[in-house]
Image 1: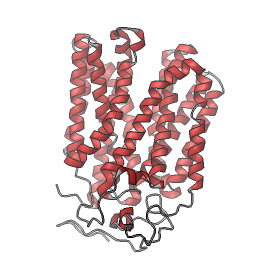
Image 2: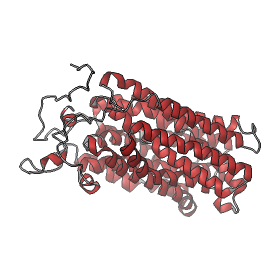
Image 3: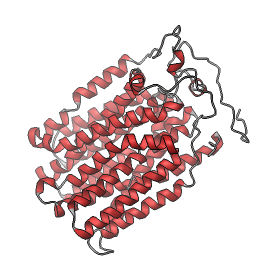
Image 4: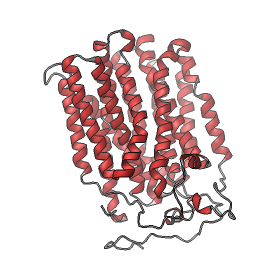
Amino acid sequence: MTPRAWPDVPRNVLILALCQALGLAGAPFVILVGGLLGAKLAPRTGLATAPIAALVVGTALGAVPAARLMRRLGRRNGFTAGAGIGLLAALTGAVAVATDSFATLCVATGLVGMSTAFVQQYRFAAIESVRPEKAGTAVSMVLLGGVAAGLIGPQVAEALRYVAGAEYTGSFVGLGVLYVAVALLLALLAEPLALSHQPRMASPRSARQLLAQRDFLLAIAAATIGFGTMSFIMTATPMSMHTLDGHSVEATSRVIQSHAVAMYLPSLFTGAIIASHGARRTMIAGIAALAGAITTASAGHSFHSYWLALVLLGLGWNFLFVGGTVLLSTSYRPEERFRAQAVNDSFVFAVQALAALSAGAALKAIGWHGLVLVPIPVLALMLGLLFLTRNPRASGPSPTSSSVTTSGQNDPEWASRAPGSPTGPPHTTPLLSQTRVEAPPAPGQPCLP
């Protein structure tokens, strides 16, 4: 399919945001239903959280296959395949509940995780669908769909709980309907402008070469540390609040819901903050919010301490994750995007899985106060790196190098980004032309001024 020109792509971002609201609903659905059914079906108590663990592991394992499949099939077909995996997961879950099979339930939630890995790529498709200076806004709009997802998933689970056969069979069928709706919406998605009509200046770089770039590493570190810190503390919160401190299930649920809203609702303004202050300053603000969450969590065990700590935790995650995603988009050429995004998401979701799986053991070993202090060293390291690179020099080959085309700076897309902007190349890049270079329009498309 011929890529659409720039004027059409805001529709793409809207479609992706709607798909995010429906496709990401599987994760909160599993967190609610997986925990309840795990306690009911697990052969022993220690395995009760295995369905939720399978969700997290499935997301981590699905990151690279999702990117590779989209490289072969394109964004729209790849995303549709991800929705198909989600539908298979929902049907498998319905069978698991109907047959009281714990192993089948874990397979189902693992497949939901793999489908979620495709959903996590929506933000990159949004970046590819807008002008570079709108990257932060595009990512924020898509992530905003997560607010609706946090409400839709649990609502579907509860509303259809007793509708068909065994308890929660109807819930899984309802989840399948959501994935069908995602596939129908994706049929309206235009293949993002991949700049395939632009000349390629060099062969795509390897993962090792991409990881040698400072900005690429900073972007991965920001998203990984944000996700890891959030997942580590959030996973332990229900156990600490309800099991250890005796808060009610309703109070614990309110804290987790407020946390979910705080993760995604700031996306209303995160894009504008990045556009005006830059990705690095936004990430520094995210680290400050996470530090505030740790300080508040350490202050006590009251409902208000938990609530404020989890709200700040969600805000800090948003700033680091969106800022890291935007910074990442400036560190690779268009033909490298799938490889770069796969490397990024592999790190991010592997660390998230490790954090989620270790949170319970850490809480038991060192308690709530000790647990919330664990992320401090990596946050301090991230903050130091951001300050040390606040006046970045060009990464990649020197101006005299014959391999300069491997840095991506000769790409028209790269050159079209404003120097020093949050989505553009560094101020001191010696080879960057200050003249905006536009790609030739696709056949039959008007040329923008």
